[in-house]
Image (cartoon, rainbow over all chains, first blue to last red; front, side):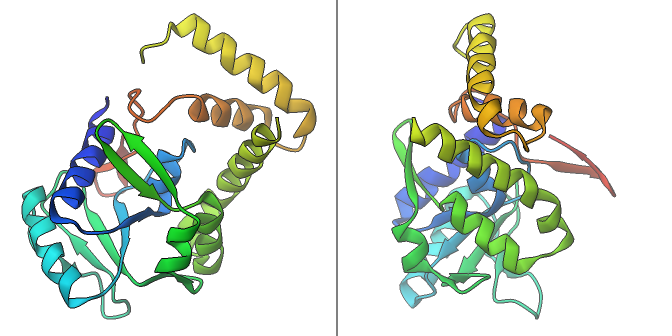
Length: 157
Length: 60
C-alpha cells in the first residue's frame, strides 16, 4: 500500500470512529475508482448539521489535524490542515447542484481492508467538474470522460 | 503489487486490445494508461496525491 492509499485508509478509520458520514468526491474519488488522475487533496462531501460540525472537530482530532478553516469568502467549503495531505470539506452539495442525498444514491461502496469508502460516481464527478469548468477541471475532464467510456465498455461484457 | 508484473502486463495488453477497436477515438497511450490503472485495485501501491515541493513544482 502506498502512502497515498494509507492516508485514505486513515481518513476512513477517522470517519468510522467519529461516525461522520462523508462521500469522497473530486479527483481523489476518481483515483480510488481507478482513474489515473492526481490531486493535491482529498475532498469530502458532508451534510452541514450541528451534529456533523461536532463530529468534524472529532474527525480532525482523529487525524491529528487542526480544526477546519474557511477556504475563502466565496465558498462555504473548508479545509483541514495539519494532516499528511489537506482534506477539504464540502457541505451539502457539489457544484452543479448535486445534493448530498443524490450523490450518495449513486455512490459506490468500496471495501478497503476493514473499512468501506463511499465514493461518488464517476458520472457525478464529471458533471460537477463540467459545471465548475475551472482550468484545472478542463485539464482533467478528457481523461475522466475517456475513463468513463472504458468502464462502460468493460461493463457491457 | 501482488500480481506477477509480466502476468499483469499481459492482462493489460489483452484488455487494451479488446477495447481498442470499440474506442478508436481514445488516444492509444491514454487507453493503455486507463486500462492499467483500472486493473490495479486500490491498495496495490498506486500514487495519486501530489505534494508541492516548491512553488509550481509537484511530486507524487
